[in-house]
Amino acid sequence: MQLLGVPVTATLSRSTFTGLRCKECGHGYEAGARHVCEDVCFGPLEVVYDYDAIRSRVSRASIEAGPTSIWRYREFLPIEGDPIDVGTGFTPLLKAHRLARRLGLKNLYIKNDGVNMPTLSFKDRVVSVALTRARELGFTTVSCASTGNLANSTAAIAAHAGLECCVFIPSDLELGKVLGTLIYNPTLMAVKGNYDQVNRLCSEVANTYGWGFVNINLRPYYSEGSKTLGYEVIEQLGWQLPDHIVAPLASGSLFTKIRKGFDEFIKVGLVDEKPVRFSGAQAEGCSPIAQAFAEGRDFITPVKPNTIAKSIAIGNPADGPYAIDIANKTGGSIAAVSDAEIIEGIKLLAETEGVFTETAGGTTIAVLKKLVEQGKIDPNETTVAYITGNGLKTTEAVSSAIGEPFLIEAQLDSFNAAWERAQSLHRASWEPVA
Amino acid sequence: MAVQVLIPTPLQKFTNEEASVALTAASVDGMLDALEERYPGIKGRLCDEGGKLRRFLNVYVNSEDIRFLQNQETALQDGDEVSIVPAVAGG
Image (cartoon, rainbow over all chains, first blue to last red):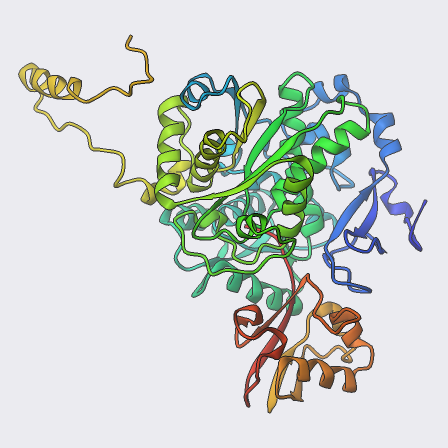
């Protein structure tokens, strides 16, 4: 097999991927640590697979017999040898009866990556793949630029794999995300600037240090991990595609890879093809993709983020044009919501489904609500909302919006009085009593 | 104006592996032309046929994205640092 002049090396024969290819111009490259089309157009590189080989090796039964982690899909992931398996993936897909009733939907599901392992966000998927590949490519130090979740995940999985780790974050991140990185004892650089500035610095560091940056020179491998969010939903829906998905948009990578996951399962015959609408969620304080979508543009004008949804506050989203293309082609939408709506979204999901998500999840739920109100989601559609992170990491966002405990004496009288007060609070009109 | 241009790794094959290049230019457009003059062929990687920077490249002047300034017409001052960075994903 030949990839636009690049011969496929025998060393890759154990795997199902054959090299890298520019998403823009199609120019081929060997599967090393590189992320842009340096010979032609600087477009992003993507992993290329031998789908005939995959088709001959996998079936629904073989996948179902695999580990309860992303590695049950390893034929679809760009690694050669043994994976770093920290139990990442195969998170719950909840049928969200109560949230559906509240919103006026009939078939709503929550894909809950807020309980992903080991660090409670979808980033564990991409980092498990990136660090497996980093080890294969001979890196001993790994790094990333992060809005928080990626830092947690890179530090944790590097610790498990025994890799040196240096991560970069904006200096204004939530305490939970800083602590949730430091505990794994990486070198942590808190940069005085926003994420886009951190990313620029990291690109310059990557130019001079020989490190594996999961979201820079390992990006083609890293981003493939997000495809598993597509595969799992298909499998958990009983080997069917949903009708509509709603996911948060930061760089836009997750959104495009869920689509790629769906397309690959169709391509190898694991699921029947049908149209799936893709809708994206942004915070108003950082909504360059939603703005471009609303104005009918196919290019992104960067913005300076100002929102509580820090995990998705990327003002210069690299995959934004692709996200817009997918929303347009599938008949989906991209919408933005205010910080107040994001907090309401977090509370709504918690109160109706028992799922405590971070600000990115609040953004997704608030946009889901908005799209339903605008008539953009059919009540009968099978809709999946992707919850990508855990609320315990961003308690600052909701701490002033969730009431207080009743402080009482250790006496029955005191409890009785407090209980009476509690009962006088209004029940939501939609909620059945007893 | 004497400016310093940071060259990303994939382009350093044009610059004899130099990661940082000193040039004289009055604007970002002028900087691109000056780069081309010294390292023939490099502008064709950075820009499309119309001379517009490719959409997956970001250019910063003193850490500010030129799309927040005057894009390729952004004026350069003595001592400015221009950084050319291919777009990256993440979060």
